[in-house]
Length: 188
Length: 213
Image 1 (tube, rainbow over the protein chains, first blue to last red):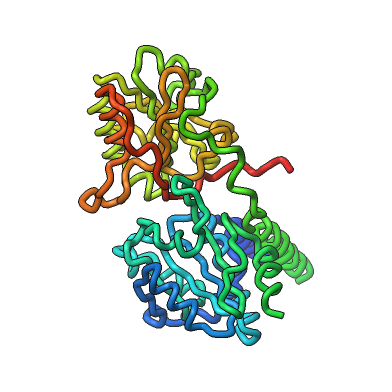
Image 2: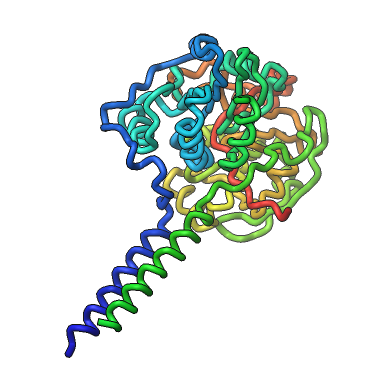
């Protein structure tokens, strides 16, 4: 006689546990989890402004989306899965995602690679050579009109059209819809 | 069986509803303009303001903190940002070195997720003995157009902005080439003009409260 109430109680308890897991801060829709490569799969090369310029120009006839991020940047971590999902969706149409981490280079193995592996992004992944210090050369290349005393928060995303011209600069965390609208405008 | 099935159904429904809600709750906020006000320029007057001290809750005004001082260094800081935390020692040192020379260091925490209790515990743990004000609703961050932590505004007692920028140019102390704030404070306390009145601050973005619109 007691079996049924126990089963009901157990089922309810499982539901509550699952619900609690769902509202936990780290919960995210598992868009990329299944595609995550093995821990050692992601290659993260050190880069500087000149290297980034080469990385962009070498992706000929592509819409190159450059994202500056860091694991210490909450808004970056929030928006990152959207970019990865869009890369998967639009790669065949010519989107190329290039990400540059501004984490301390000492955090490459412990923070950056695990985050990238979890995200499912395995290509176009770089870390700034000077870690979490921003070299002005990046801004001379990407935002030459920015006043020299203007503070620079992350994330920052730059969209290059197929002709290699920088056409869009997005400052601050973006929604997936914002990203998709901005990127697809140049994929046509 | 029926009761078990019903309970299982309820459990699945509860999970589904909560999961969907969680997706929305965790979704990134829509992009808001990072520039929330016209940035004050060097020479502009910063209007007086008052914010509660995170430790005591007592209201502290810029005017009161400036009284009898040569300048006030308003530093936007964070308890969680690794960039800001990399400067804890340097901020404490600057407050100590220049406190007796007429400089008042004041921390301002505008991050929506960092509560006065967190700020107090963080200050104690890191020997930050200068006042740290809680800028709920990021009103002062908006007024000054502060964007990152750490970011410094050096203000004379008459409200004149005389320096705006980072503490220095490198997070690793051993790599520092330009000690911007230190140099500015040396100039102010030495009665000289500040050679470099501004530089680019880079750090964690200030986590502003969601806009009403």
